[in-house]
Length: 312
Image 1: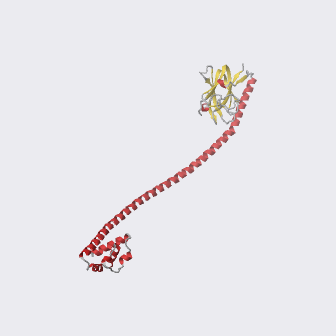
Image 2: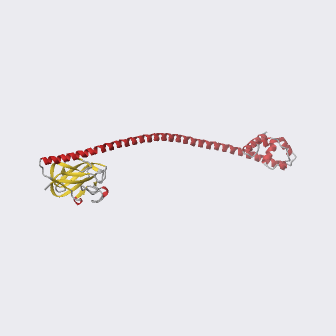
Image 3: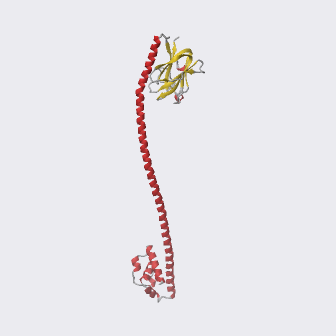
């Protein structure tokens, strides 16, 4: 009985490992002499077909041959048991590997789901940001159109006011004035764009120059200064924007000085446009140095200027 059980287990094991054909292993085969047994498959076929027949075939063999067969069968039984244990171990390892891969798969599934959720959120945020950009661009276009529409009117107002002031002065027979468009060598600046030299592209602040003075920092408080050469009665300044470019100072104040160290001036800023215009002081000032300080600008803080003085 024990041999039959061992043989059955061995048979199933070898079948599982592809070493025996199930049909050939279980079907009876013609019994031959034990000396013709050449491999495990044939041996197992004979034993499984009929153990009693197999034993009877060996009954007439000498004891040594029988011992050899017993040793073979015991070896098969031992190998089968060991292989069976290995098979079970391999099966357990395969299950552990499958479980590990399943955990990895589950973790990746969760990660993919999280990434998909994040992608949906970010896509929506991108869509909203795009709408906000479009709204900002539309508002910018509207503001630009409003500025462009109002600049000519403001320039016209400045020109008209300057003309009226001149006419009123004529009515009261005020002394005549002249414009001092001092040379670049008599001008200085708080800064110049890109640190270019005076006389360069951004260091040409004379009225009628091909460019203008362009400040360095884009902040309020940058200034250009003119040296009249001697103390004169200053009545105001003449200002215009940069030539062939939509850049100009939109508001400024004027400070004057006799010694170039101590400056005084009107604190209320003048509003200016791109076109050349006169800006007259409420009260004339005795000064040699005239400093124009920018407070706001359009495009870039750029300016050309001269000084209106009382004629000598």
